[in-house]
Length: 541
Image (cartoon, rainbow, N blue to C red; front, top):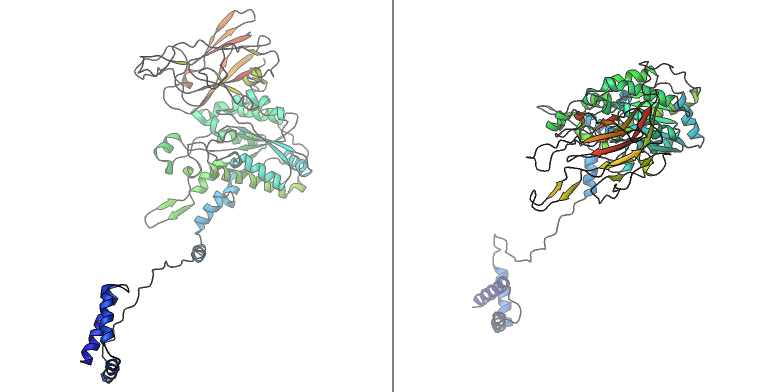
């Protein structure tokens, strides 16, 4: 009986444990009643009997509360340390060095020629003495004058060079004098305004890419020669460093940016001219393409390039932050070499050749008046008819842009259009005629070869908004020339090849004005793209 009661008690206790009934329920109360019927004597007997029994071969089953789940602790610092311990392959290390602008081999290969160092040494000594030097970067504005794919102005290669110069040499002032689509020839027209008026100590030239567009490298070479001579002969006697920048061929970049081919620049022609004048040449083009093919990850099946043109650019010619960093590294490498031996360099000016490389002075006398200077009243004797000229960006007419920028004041134009109800699904439509023209009057009739400079940022056409409509008969740009008496001298137009209905690279172009012109009226008809009106350049006879 005692054994039976003891077993019953154990059974009830187990039942209460599994059901999880709390104290005070009916089941628990019932269990307590049974327990109370068991006398203390019976309990003692039960204990005695239990102690006499043989121990069971199976362990007694016990019920315990399950522990709460705890997230395992991870030591992320230890994991990071483990990753840091994994050494980079030589190729991966080279990639890191390249992107930091510190790859010794690439920078060394880029230094095509140190050139004569006298003028650069003079500029460095001036800066080390605490006087501010002026450094002008002149050329294609996509890399020097505008941000484009650089995230901010501090990441442009010219800004990185400025930072290095101030940290390692002394005070300097950087002038980013680049404009879009600037070739060596149009640069000769603008050089007084864009460069020489700043009396620079050092000038970097970047024209290899733009001069090579449309296979114009040979014809632009004369402009490059005359441009160098004009800068060398200016009052401040600056040092010139020729930069050979690069890009990818447009079609190959569009089709396969990971395997784009080298763009045919004007570097070959320009290096010959630079060597003739014993100038420093930094050949970023050849150095980057030669060294990038060496940085590959070798797999069992193929070699994977770790860096290519797409790494440093999102278009076929314009570089991103990484591209600017690598380019700046090649320039700083050269400047550091000169700085290291500065005390041994003579500052006596070099005897540069008196005759040009091509023995042709066609672009040596160009003067320039910017349209921005005319608008601001800085060009004495010139005037601009503002009666019908809307200068607000909210107006659908001529628009002033960068007017406060002394480097590239321009006027940007759009085709006029109106909202016509019931026509073309009640959309804005372009007018067939543009009643608002731009008229510029000169202080006196021009003599010699005079040109008005234009450029486009993309293809420009005159097609109607409805693609099924025929082309308008108007040329995108026409210029009417008048003499001092108001007589009409004739109509001139830029080459039509500069304005196509297909998307192309931006271009610069000029219109040659009639001899004796004292006033011009510019008419712009465009339905695609934008036209920039820069200013007037005159080459004396």
